[in-house]
Image (tube, rainbow, N blue to C red):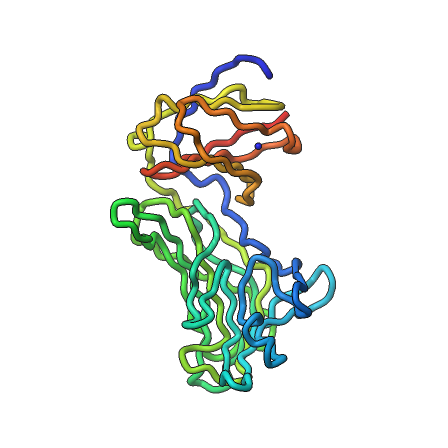
Amino acid sequence: MKKQTFLTIALMFTVVISKAQSVPNGSFEAWSNPNGYLVPDDWETLNDMTTTAGVYTATRGGTSSDYYLKLTSQNVTGMGVMPGIAVSGMLDMGNLTALSGFPFAFRPAAFAGKWQYMGNSSSDIGFVSVYLTKWNTSMQMRDTIGMAMQDLSGMEMSWFNFSIPFTYNSTDVPDSCIITMSASGANPEAGSYLYVDNLNFTGIIAGVENTEVTGTFKIFPNPANQDIQIDLSGLKATAQQFEITDLTGKVIATKQTDGSSLQTISIGELPAGNYLLRIFTAKGIVTQKISKQ
């Protein structure tokens, strides 16, 4: 379906979770109107396909500052019944499966939010699924690290707070998350609906300590007001990319490495505060807090 005193601080990096990352546009307050119809930012739906028939299976509910996503399976001329489906990334319009998600390097305990739903009949059961994956460089494929899934049997016709626990089959930390929400199952029926709002991750589950694999490196100065220098000579794995996020996990800046052991990243344009610096390597992701003065 982003000179400083020369105070050098040696930082031991471990694959840890400091705070659960937010779901992109999880409150569905951000919408765009690129082609004459509304679409929720950071989510892909079937609207681009069904607009030719003037039908939309994903619409905006609520009022300003309190919007939510309405997914409704509908009969579309020339297409049959199309499910109300949304993916936090890219959606394959042909087979209605997720093609991609968003960067995510945490191990939350549960996926939560609030919803309303009802199937047109007892045989049309919608679902919510969340997959946490990690790229396997040896096998050139994605490994599933954990998942949270729930079928939408029965009905919830008023707002209900839900929490779906994650099941983990690996102690690794993921690098990507894919959320799929559908008002219908394999054989969609017109009229089935799923309304969702305030999506988030809750709780913390520790991953493996990974310093033996990734080693240590130095960062200076920290705090900083313009540039930070990163000494990668102590790493046991080749750094591939740097990423700066805020404390909720929102990506602020990215930079590819140039292959040298000493890297410079500018943070001069960032507002003062605390951020997370993530280094992607072939053997895992390491994360540490940095401060902008």
